[in-house]
Amino acid sequence: MNGYKKLGRNSAHRKSMLRNLVTDLLREGRITTTQMRAKETGRKAEKLITLAKKGDLHSRRQVLEYVYDEDVVTKLFDEIAPGYEDRNGGYTRILKLGPRDGDNAEVVYLELV
Image (tube, rainbow, N blue to C red; front, side):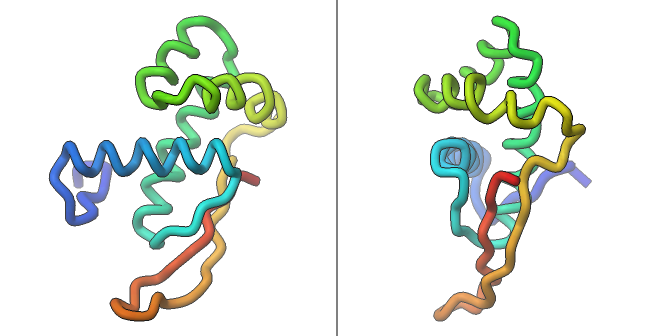
């Protein structure tokens, strides 16, 4: 296995979509998406939160490579990451909502715990 899902997109579109989903998740705290997208987004978000828990300049620059919105990065380092200091992973949760009308895809909430 490659370690990731292709999600029916080429690599540039997939990377862009996941960046936008992660940015929205960190900004809003909860997003609605399909189950497969939520699983990939959760993986990326958890890695960024783990980086933010370190709190040093190198970690901030690594997060800024992935998340382009500086306000979201500031929120991640100042508000979100300190809340998870005593937690060793498992920062996101998936709640199933049911099938979507039209294509019957499984729709879920992805939220920060």
